[in-house]
Image (cartoon, rainbow, N blue to C red; front, side, top):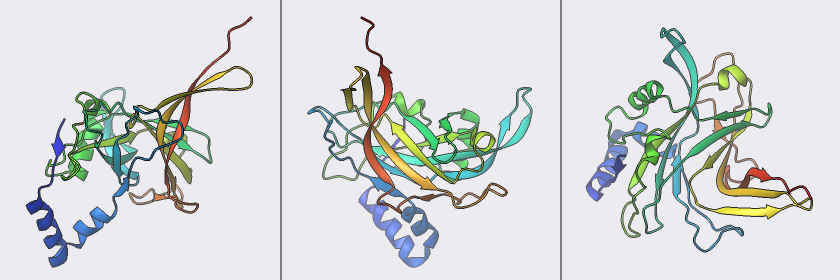
Length: 245
């Protein structure tokens, strides 16, 4: 896993480039959104939560291989993200990115295909300085802790969804649920005796106010219409039925 630290000189250099003539750099930084952890009522005393940065999901056409090994074009959705750890201890990040369409009721899990990841690395990180990871490789080493008075030691990744164009091409409203950013776990019992297993989850809401005829890379925007698009929740991940008498 590659972590990235921008020293003071590098930070000032980036500012200078922006001021002198780097609008593209400024636009790239401005496109990033930051999500800080917050305490929730269901948090226990030992709960930790990672910090999260992301860019809105993008739509691109990439090369992929069909069942015969032949190279074909495929429309793929992906999301650039970074995490960093202010908990004081190394924390293992086992991410799960689930995209759920709110208008079509479909669910799509991240598919970390190495062939697609390599193409996205060239697109989003041509110099290789960020060292983008998949949801599998990013879990192999704990996220190192950052010092409170230092620039965060970020680790970069990308989530990839390969089946949205086939199963939900017309979606205009969806959410991405991100598991693994926290160890928060809670159990709630319903009046019927069922136990709901819930995990602390980051939910990010998006809109896609376009059609699917000619999908473009920047079709998607955060859904801030009813408050911030990002919210921390405890989401039910499984249900335990009561034992029969």
